[in-house]
Amino acid sequence: MMATDKPTESKITVEKRQNGRWCFVLNHRGVIYPAQGQFATMFEAQIAAQEAAKRLIKR
Image (cartoon, rainbow, N blue to C red; front, top):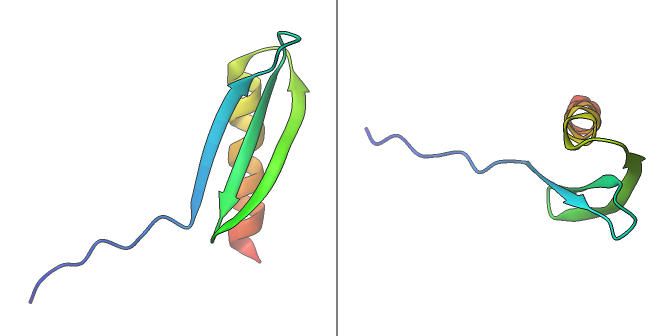
């Protein structure tokens, strides 16, 4: 029996905006949720993105 890789349901991209703040873009099951947030650090944006992805997966 061959093991198959299950495709990832969510992809998170963290970006720095022109104003120096951080945001995230979430792609979940082919739906792209636009840039969210005005975070002071990349770490804050990553944490918020992970929480948003968890909530989408729970649905």
